[in-house]
Length: 251
Image: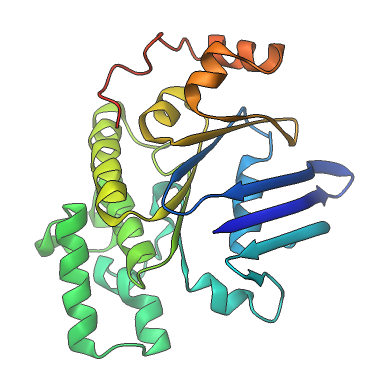
């Protein structure tokens, strides 16, 4: 679904991402994890074409991302930011439908039907669709951000620490709902987090980054029981991971 080949990125004099190759398999949830500044969010922004690599190539399906096609390909990707990344001057409904209205891809009736379908899927209250971001909770803002990402029925959903700013109870509920949504839609998902327990809850595949490179990639059990190097062991121990994951039922 997504393939990066020898992709690197430097900001100023700092190499944020060393030459990196990574394949994202369709229909699976891949979690990018690592400490702050390890390059995981940069990797996600490269995948969606928000920034260009200094070297290497990125393929979405059979097409290589390039300046002349990135906007079209981005319509096939859903992107969720921390705290939703909503426009404060637009209502929840207007945020969700912004791109669909801009592209004029569907009739007004079909757009509204899609909004109601997504509200039910994400358990967002219909009566709150006309509220502005400042009038709804952090968890609801994230649900609106997810609805917006799903509006055009994308092939891939990319989420950049979507629950990082939420309190534990809201975070727990949203995690449960997100995993249910991922399983229901059977989409290809790439999720960035710094929380190993969250990775354990969601991931089919874990990609652990450190200092701008992939240190280890595979099922979480491999990171726990067969660490590739001492950094993996230190990172896992720092998270205080229980032997069986985070205690919730695995998929």
